[in-house]
Length: 480
Image (cartoon, rainbow, N blue to C red; front, side, top):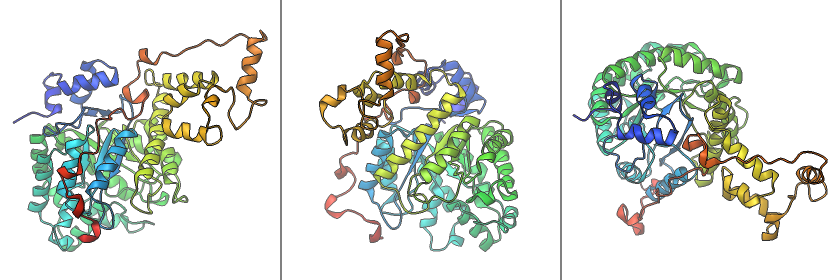
């Protein structure tokens, strides 16, 4: 049986994936191996994912960002999902999670994503299993294992497994304001209530470990009892499940399987760092993968902002990967522009945290753009921007002509009141010393995610749809 990245690392072997990660992170390959061997970082890399460009998730490396995509029961189809994949990778997603619950042939959508994604693909196999039965209580241990094994054979790199929510945890949610907000958690809770049995994903966890070890699938241990409102953050239910996730982390490591642990949710700003530190302690440093967290509950339509604030704090405190939130959170299924806005918010959060942590070379990008801004090098400024197309579009709304690309002002201040032009003129006149710093990004020690351009995988083109589906007979969600 082929070994996992964790098993190779423990044996002292630097794999080709570790070498590629070292190149992308600008670190020594041996450091990568050590971090993986100690469980402090994961390289999600299923043996069957041939299109993958290996990456790493761990607090000692650059902060990563995940984008959720997926078809729902009410909207979306294969063509649209492949377009979302392309958009996510183009705008800088380090991984994508296919959270499809409907919208046609889920196997075909998943396989298409894996075949064409250069970034790791994650799933929640419970969703597919639930779709195959009429009632939650009809879910069987065997069906869950069959779905997990099938997805592993397809090439899924990591899976959210909701194994930490136990029967004894359920009464602890009774005093909550928003109950159980995890889809997988609510399904497992209903199953346990109706069947009067322990969580089947917990009961069969070691068998899942065997499947994951065979294909090198990474666990993303689901936080089924994450808080869905500020009021529920840090309650007894959340922390009881976290303790179970810490135990399961050890079990997975014993089987040679890589593990990361998912986290909240909705958390007040003053509690974010505390929650990261607690997870790191309970789970012995396994990478923490957080959704947000949202630091206020008052802003539907703007939750890419409320959550990016919490994400930046979490990443600076040690969270290794951030799961983006789009403006559609709590409101609807995100579309292309929502994916773009969510990723921009989270790439900002991730980069800001890396600068704040002092990641080698992380601030070089900021310095280079600041120099271009001061020098009125508009084209260079656009090229260095996180989202070059948007930066130029906003500039050109009021100053569209090519002649304005050499102008020493923008439309906010105009010619007379531009502070940088005034400062430059004073220095040119000899009143102050000239500024001549220049940052060489080509020589920067920064990780690939902390130098432009964002989204370097242009090969993630949407494939010819005819490979997967007859466009004259598209499968829509409302056909199901």
